[in-house]
Length: 468
Image (cartoon, rainbow, N blue to C red; front, side):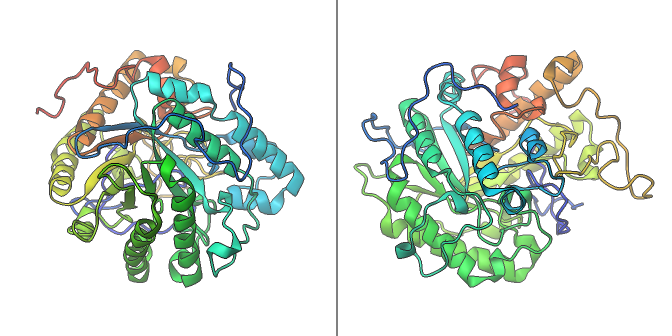
């Protein structure tokens, strides 16, 4: 969960390509599913207006109501650990992300593979289940290559090569499904031109990301956000300017990100659709791996309005964290995360824990990147490396939940509850992720099925776990 790592994170392209840990100044670093059972509506065209003919939805009041949501990960931005079958079907071990998939696959084959995925990975049945689980938000990650930015909307390139375009109609359909089922949306720009962090979740796994040092990439990103606001701003509650921008790479990146948040905010505000309420479109920024204190008094009123900060919290991406017992995880969360989070949120901007999980290990296949093993069992580094620390076997910690022991299921439930309690001390939470092919400990959907996530998110087996 709230794995707040503080010192500089070494930039290793193979290091976690799925999620990254939020750092605080207090701690050192370190199968595809079938189609919906109901007939699926026709896919909208590129020009279809999302939400046409659907009922309106009252804007979400982030000041009074807790965010309880899930990420729809791996749908419009591929991640090998979420859908390993797609990468296995690609037939090339060098295909490690969506960039190399477009680069190395036959274009027609790539289009067919992705179209099938966009159509089937998340269906309307999933939106109905999310609503039935008492959740009020989805966060929908998208890549810039899926946004049909016209040349009239930017002075930069509109090329998406080598990415495979075509997801936009499915994104529109997702927004319509959200509206139909009364679910609020955070539309998250998860991948930017040049890669904002070098992780596969940006679309491109690379040791040399260039988004932050290429002004045309940053300009194109702002133009993309402006176009999204103009075209679908009325269908969403919040637009997230960029996911996990890597401020730890260097001061030049940190400075570029800070200016980008300001410029992106201004671009959204300049074109956002009119509202009949006093609540403007939410604008979400991230901590850029710089810690909460780096954003004290940033974009607070009057400079910013309806601004949210997105925190990503895990305690599994370093040996230091993996060494913790469940009791240690809980203690750290309650004594370090909770006060830091509440102090910041009470005097700055609305704060949402936008990614977290019940996973207690990094054992999920390819969680650290295709071809990479896990820190937990010592396979992330070459065997025999004297720095390799083995915490135990991955057996029983990942895969199908029916193989999980009763003790492990109880641990997962406790870990879910403490993280919810802490996040709801601020503005709330968005779990990562709704579903996976083969890593049930990460799946909200499977958590509901297996009982370590309650159907009612206010239900507790371990009330007041932090002693409050």
